[in-house]
Length: 361
Image 1 (cartoon, rainbow, N blue to C red):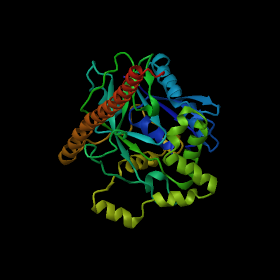
Image 2 (cartoon, one colour):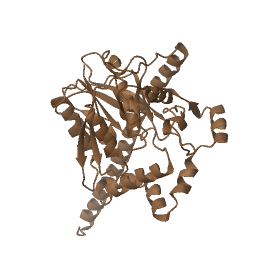
Image 3 (cartoon, rainbow, N blue to C red):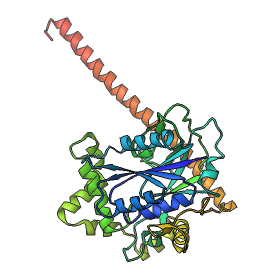
């Protein structure tokens, strides 16, 4: 089996070396990367992995950011040029963590009739900046919520996908969905957790959201940045990014209170894996991390019984969320149809009254 990862990035130097090294040591064989106008050292890190023979780099210099188009191109190259069997389409701040073994061992268990599996999101919260790498500081994530009772469940995203390589695959916005012949989704089994580190420092947060806003300005996609990303853009223009970032940083006191209330979960698995890779000496490295040996260097321990039971319960809730989202869409569609029927009925009634009275249209 050959596993290829795609990644698109701009100015992600604080995380991209760790991200590439982690996945190459967790079962990924090769990476196709798109670099979009980076100026912070991201390009040089990509080149380091490229010289080592683990990466193909594509440079994009346009002002816009058509992510779905770029990722679809890379995913197709993975199939046609690099002979991939499976493809992971990842963001720079995402770490795909298999629940036992490594990524390829997990994917080998997927029945042939299925072409897509889902991975659970694990969102890690912002913590105070210091001189340490992000993975040493960000070891607390949000506890899983219950999508069945969440009124925003229709819009929330609880998972991303890994898919079999196909030459005609189409990757959806944000890498959350794929479409193509033979890409049937395997439901109810989530063998990979997706660790997400979106806010790592004040400077990184400013770059992230300002770039996103700038890349979509004046386009149809601009509307998606009218929420939190728009706040970051406005804060950057006002010179108050530091204040906004600090308002989202979880203090030690908040951390302790949130842990007691079941809001936060301490999770050091990414930290421990990256520590291990950084500690390897005397072997080929890139960006300060060990490159893989003849086979995947990282082997992930299978969770214990209690963890598996809790995970199974979470999976059941997530499966239920699909039903919630579908029902809410049906309800909204019915409301729109009812409103249209009422509107048509009023127009017909008015036309009949005019016809009876001899009035013109």
